[in-house]
Length: 401
Image 1 (cartoon, rainbow, N blue to C red):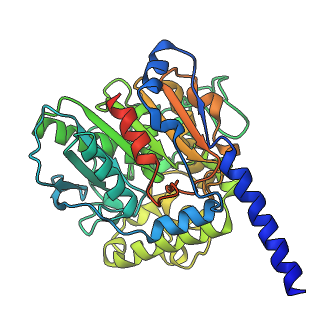
Image 2 (image 1 turned 90 degrees about the vertical axis):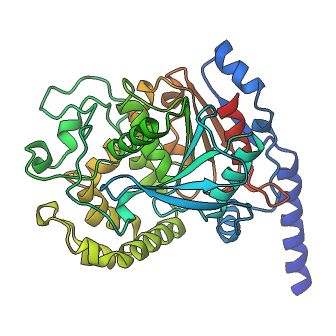
């Protein structure tokens, strides 16, 4: 009996090994134009993803999360005035200067400069002669979190008064970007309460850095939730955008659809990571304004991501409910407004970003987007057979093309 089982396992493994070894690993989507074609020609690594044929998305994700940083550098933190926002500047042997571009890295919500995938991006940037690098730290998880901080670009690019819905729905699952008023909490509309406006925080940070250091160009790579924020920023702030090129990696593009298909493993894992981050700052969050109506104790007792978002995230960000948050903050709603070159990288077996949530036609309709989908790769992983991350090379080739 054991021999039959072992034979079956070997046959199945052989089938997947042979199938995955010879199939095309990356598909490229974009609106045909000589401009985008020229960029793609300068990015050979787009089609050079060579994963272990026996790895699935979960294995990519888990193995990548266990990797250790290997870069020869250290970091120095700079706080952005009294906002609670900070950036970690990467310090290495090469002197930085404002003639070369700045690479601004946006991790997942609780990501940090020491994470392996951030380290891989930094090392690849060095290979491309980019030495001006900083990693963004959100004020949400800062011990200097300032609940009352409100910069002048709060709610910029949003319509905060009632108007008739325009007939510009993309699908039944998410709305266009002309209906901001209908998603926000009444207190936000009436200006009786504040909120954390993540795209405005990003513009405030980039403005501070641009003014202080006078970088000629700014490239941004946003991973997971960082990519969601970057996408919203590029669309909302299109008239005053400070980003010259962007890359979005492993981000759910329609959150309302991704929520339906997120795997139990990813939902549980992300929720535990967020709860752990909040518990370390409990003394800070106990001071959250009462009219934000954040249910901190209940959020800390939740198991699933949508429950945590309903009790914590949607309220912190000023939405009237979970559905409004997921619909309004979906990147796909902003992509048609983006007017800078942007690369989107995602895996079809990412437990957080189901293929149905990719909305490819809507993502590339602006004529500025190149989208890469890999058959496997998991969440912010996409490991080659040699164990190295593939996506950083693709991202950096695009940025310098």
